[in-house]
Image (cartoon, rainbow, N blue to C red; front, side, top):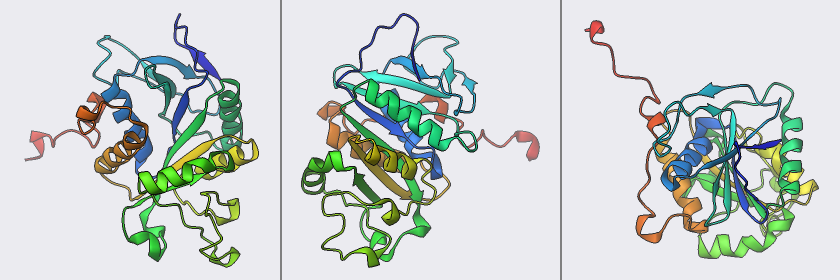
Length: 265
């Protein structure tokens, strides 16, 4: 599934990996854009999978300095200092191919020996439970192999665990105390591959942390910045003196179209 770029010799063994879901508001993809552009991450390869709809486009970032640098539907970048790989997905998964793509992605994650997966996604804010309306619109979830992250994320980072949807399956004191929920307790409309990927990672014993942002369609730049900041506060990817200086990619300049043409007036 992973094809390295050119003659780049990169060994991702022992790295963590950040993966965005194509979900409501494209918040996860925008957050990944910020991480790649701000950290000036080099591309080390791309994803070759027939489940991804094909795409080719011009340079999306400011830092490459390469005229005619082209981007594809799925690419992999790396931060060698922090031993963190970052995937960027730019197209939806072909109809009926979600499970196949998740299986191929997990197979690559296991074969590459990544230490943990950080899955970014978003979900419709109007589908929240009453308790989810209070406080910050972010939640996290863990697979059984990542239970040890529960205390650091709740105590050190102050993050909230995703509440189970079916309250009749257990009391608040007995459900999800270790950060793990069953598939029947998950309710994440608009989150793309998140639920399938989480369930498959649980079955395949993959260490995964899912970070969810509740949002709506529209201008979600502020949501993306908030998600990138949350992930950085945990992983410490940016130097502390620059942890609030996010560099917006050049591809965002016309994200919502150009100015109104003068001929309209």
